[in-house]
Amino acid sequence: MKKIAVAVLGATGPIGQRFVQMLESHPYFDIEGLYASERSGGKRFGDIVKVRGHEFSEDTLEARIRPMDIDGIARNARVVFSGIPSELAGPAESELAAKGAAVFTNAGSHRMDEHVPIIIPEINPGHAAAVERQGTYGGGGYIVTNANCTSTGIAAPLHALDGAFGLREVFVSTYQALSGAGYPGVPSLDAVGNVVPFIDKEEEKMEAELAKILGGYTDGGFEPAGFKVVANCARVPVIDGHLEALAIRLESSPSLEEVSSVLSGFKGEPQSLRLPSAPEAPIIVRQERDRPQPAYDALAGSPDRARGMASTVGRIRESHGYYKMFALSHNTIRGGAGGSVLNAELFVAKGLL
Figure (tube, rainbow, N blue to C red):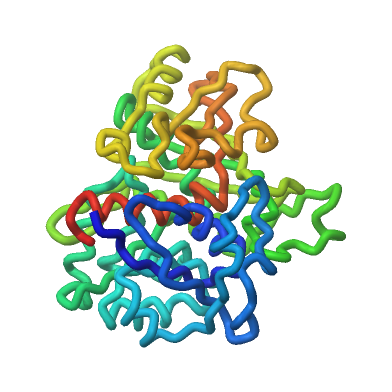
């Protein structure tokens, strides 16, 4: 297939840099341009890159950052991957969609809009149909969001358990990595040797977004999931990888072995379609008593293109009628750029690009 021209917005930030990583040598997409603010215009990508654990090609390192130009981006790129901050993303993404661009965004500005889906392809690929009701769809433009990075890591395990046993209540406490706050992020004197038990609007976003993601889409509207989610969120001194503690009440009473089997055996549409960035196993279950851990499991997932795209679950146990476990995911890959790239791959497979 002829590769689709794509643009990366916010290419100097941690999510933007992960977009570039995920799009290098991609079988579907070709990077048309890297864009950021005026003050970054003209800089080499290699001079600003801070991604760990990935070697960029010389061509990528030599690429120049361009100032944001909505008309030029919409004219030259069919797809726009947006990693710009939410306060700037809303109007820019709406304008790009109005000019015919397919926008796949990590920002939260449009997540709760009426006909904008929050897509995690293993969970709700049918929500893709919502873009056809966006007013810009006739001209080829639309907006697709990925989930909040904390919601992403637990959505697949919750979806698998709900399908097998029925969910009644979900209580989640998060231990969120510093990279989730962007760069330079949390000041070092606040972060080192400390836990910050507040992340602005994070708990509200988790509770609202999971209801939309795990609910249905029928007759042109979203139906929220029928169970409640209660979240507590904290920032911890870890670079990458959000760890989340879950306490779940189910409709039935499966054994721990049954719970583990359902999680480890779960697969979705990206796996059957063999999408390039889809992990072979979207949920990896660890049996060790002290896993998952960010240092060992944040980059879980295979093949190589899908490193960091799997959720890792461990310490599955039962107490007082609740099933307890820990889940870990990479917040800037699966919970950020990788989630949007996988969404775009799904749209290619569905003929929406």
